[in-house]
Image (cartoon, rainbow, N blue to C red; front, side, top):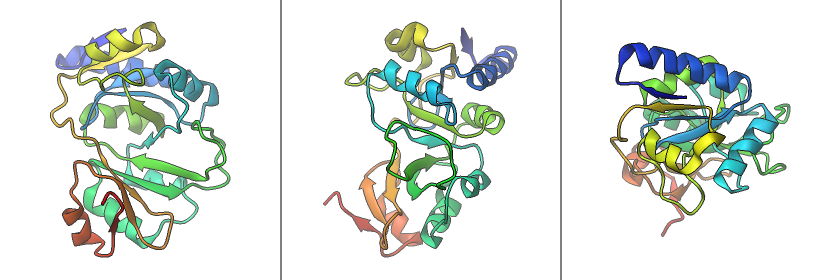
Length: 213
């Protein structure tokens, strides 16, 4: 099903349909503040497997959350630098890599790493879905090797019937990927440069390392 979220009545139906789809283990495509994402319930192993198969990849999927508070339920301990960065840049284009709680029963595509990449996106449609579904495994809505989709229609052209619900909200306003910061060692490290420049990150965490250089 394809829903145009620029129309209020269709947006409401579309978000409800997406929530139901995720809850039963289906895949959905939704807008974020970077590019469109293909998502599934992070705690349904078969759903995450379907997501990775649809993309044609086997790398671990990042996780999107609808609230800062959700993070506390996912991690074993949250370093102070991580908490400071989250307070400064969430919701937004910052992905943090942290050690997840050992008790979590999930498989995001790379079992045994003990870490997870988490982000809270700054997009009202995504947040409405995430606040009802809980954490979702979400990756860019495209086949591996193809350009990331900047509309739901572009995503549908690549992913077709593998996805149950498409939420269209127009072209993504900012196509720059999120900045990824690894917080699993003593010193925070920028793993991928993105929408948030390292100068802004250093205003919050002065000793952050840029391994891109």
